[in-house]
Length: 96
Image (cartoon, rainbow, N blue to C red; front, top):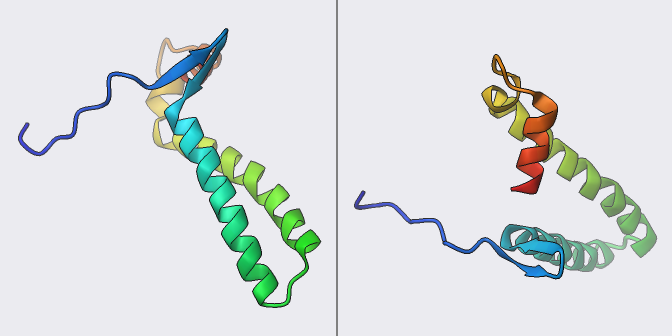
């Protein structure tokens, strides 16, 4: 294909038994950047840091769970097709 971008051959690195994926590092960097920028803007508008952190500590896990739910709902065949074990499929997708 002329207008395609190939996937990188490396998706992460290992530290002992722990596999670190580059997309996870990007997600963490995005969360930290949003936290820092959001807190600065929150304080500039007169908000308290504790209130902002309460919101963020609820928003991050809800966002992660919501993103996973969206992924499963848009890829139902990967989890609920005939002959597919949804628990094994979910475990495989987490390990990937």
